[in-house]
Image (cartoon, rainbow, N blue to C red; front, top):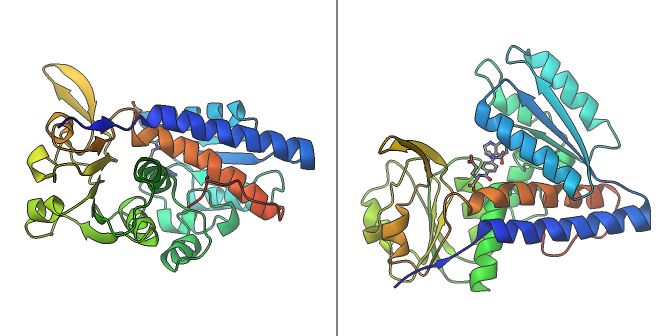
Length: 296
Ligand SMILES: Nc1nc2c(c(=O)[nH]1)N[C@@H](CN(C=O)c1ccc(C(=O)N[C@@H](CCC(=O)O)C(=O)O)cc1)CN2
C-alpha cells in the first residue's frame, strides 16, 4: 500500500483564501479590519522565521498586522504592560506571544494575562476549560489544523480509534479534546505508556506530537491508518541538515492509508489557523456571524 499524501501547503492556501474572502466581507459590509498583534521576545532564529511568516500572511489576507519585537532581557512587568495595552486596543482582535519565551519569564502568567477573547492561540486557561467542556472557545492552531485535515480526508471521524502520542498543553491535550469532540475513542500516549507499539497499532488515526525525530516506525502503524505528523525536528544526516517529523516517513507511508509530510504537512496549517482564529475573534467581538468551516 502507498499512502495518500495530505498536502498541508495546498490545504493551508485554501484556508487563507477563505479567510481573505471573509476579511473582504468584514471590510466592505461593516468597515471592520481584523487586527493581529504578535509579540516576540528574544532572538530565537526559528521563532523569528515563524513571526515573519505570520506578519506577511496576515497582511496578505488583508488584515492589520502589528509586530512587537522585544529584547531577550525584557522584564516580566514590561511584557505584561504591553499585553495589557493590546488587550485594551480596539483595533487588535487577536494577540499571540510567540513561544518559547526566555527562561526568566513565567509562560503561564504571560499567557493568562491575554484577554481570553483575543487569545488566538487558545492557550489561556479559560479557553482550555471551554474546549474541555465542549463549549465555544478559541482553539489552539496546530490541533485545529490537524482536525481540519482529518475531517477533509475522512468526512466523519465518529467511532474511530485515535492515538495521540504526546501530552503537551499546546498540541497533545487539545488534540485529544478535539478528537473526542468528533466522537473518536481517544488514547493519549506518552513517555511512560506501556507497550506503546501495541497501543499505536490499534489506532485508525495516529497523531505524533512528541518532538522526537522519526520515533514512530511503520511497523507500529495499522495498515490503512491515517498518520498526522506534528513533529518538526532539525537533524543532520550524511553531513546535510534536514527537517524530519516524529514519524519515520518512508516506512509509515508504506503502510498508512494517508500521511502528512514534514515539511509541508501540519506546519503550514498552524499559521493558516491563526489567521482563521483572528477572523473568528473579530466576528465574536463585533457580534457578527462567524466564518463557516474555520472553527472546530
Ligand atoms: N505562540 C505560539 N508559539 C508557537 C506555536 C504556536 O502555535 N503558537 N507553534 C510553534 C511554531 N509555529 C508557529 O508559531 C510554527 C511552526 C512550524 C510552521 C511551519 O510552517 N513549518 C514548516 C517548516 C518550516 C521550517 O523550515 O522550519 C513545515 O512544517 O512545513 C509554522 C509555524 C512553536 N511556537
